[in-house]
Length: 304
Image 1 (cartoon, rainbow, N blue to C red):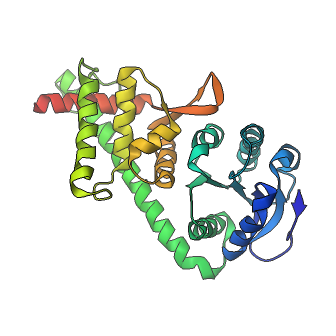
Image 2: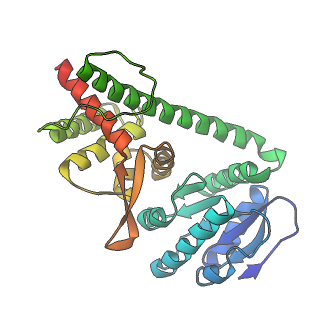
Image 3: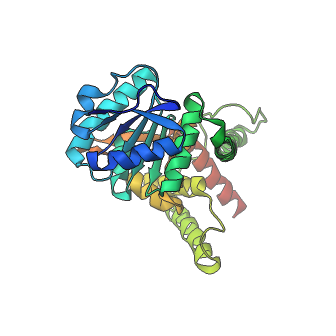
């Protein structure tokens, strides 16, 4: 553990990384308007994390870290961050997605996958401003990112509302009555039918066909792509890891991880630990989301 700049200006950050990367991490923190309170090596996390005063941002860089050391350290980081309500920013390679997501996945965790230096600095500035106020120098970065987060929240809310409406509509049609379509999810009368899994897989293939014909990036709907993939896996009795779900989203891993976090927070996705390997977790649809997807497939069947 290395003590650095505990009393300087800027929002406080605790850096957790391999010693060889702590210098670059500290530079990114300073460029974002923060100050490094301390830099902690992976083997020292269990002993050192949580000793600092206040509510610092935990900036974690998993590049070059050993899996066993990360497994122990991330579990401790999650416990401390949850208990002290600390924000967490993780810079990680694609290969670490499952391990990190198995330990850290929540509304206060931001994951940057294969991020550039500029992306890291921007994310640090936003996280610092959110956690207690970065300098005005980074106001435009914060405003731009806040707008993207607002749009993301609005889209997740819209998807949840659509699924809720479909679920309630299916129940009302089964009763032959009319009710409030803006209420919460109820037990839908729609049930999965033979062949539904193949229908969903066809929908997924059709969506990828668009990308092949018109180019990638024109039809990005990561939330819907992930809903379809998880529902197909549910019907087929398969489990989907976080890294596989990122691939299904058909967007950059950082974007997919952000969507997974928001869909989990919205109560549509849930994380299930792998009982055979604690370094991996699976993503599943919640009962609320399953009801909506069943009603959606039932509506498609009625439309022919």
